[in-house]
Image (tube, rainbow, N blue to C red; front, side, top):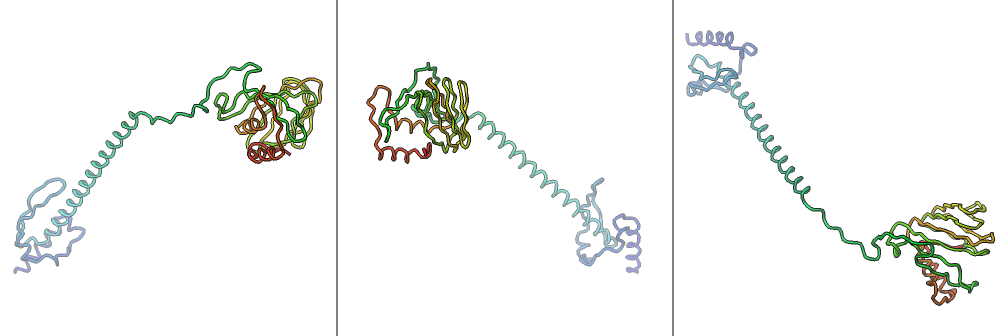
Length: 278
């Protein structure tokens, strides 16, 4: 009789409980009757109506549904707890980033070390004859002083670290020997006179107002073939050549001593990065 009542209760539960309609024969092997009797009152929580489920010896099948619901709800609660914890951490990180950003914006910029007094740029307004006037020293085979030039803007005049600007006068018959600048572009501008220019593989006569652009590494030479003095303007894209010109010249008015052959060779080697003569 006891077995028959258990079978009838099982059929009723399977027909009324939606959890058992899809699985009318749950696995109750892990639940013994003694454990079921011991836990007669089991809290059952559903999404719609929390209540207490009262069990007796004739309702063992509903235990599986209760346990399944409890595990499912527990997993949902655990997931919500993890999400809340993640949101708290994310809010904390956002606050820290905002504080750091405000601190960086409010902090004064780090002071930069001042440039040396000799290289600090300073505005200049120069007349035609103003600037560092120098005269080329004589060289082997040409003991007489050379042409006059004026260094107007360079690292020592105006403090420019990006260019060199100079002027030079060439009397009739004088010339600029063939040379090239490995590390700097150059521009020559003729204010007066007539010249023959050898630029790379080309040769051309130029006149007043002519401009000659010499890319770095290109050979250049210039001859005054006219009867007037050539007033020449030179611009270099990088400093370096002005040091060579100081080494082979003296200030206007100083004693002009010709260069010896050994001295000339030493200067050529020292400044080979700025100019190479052929």
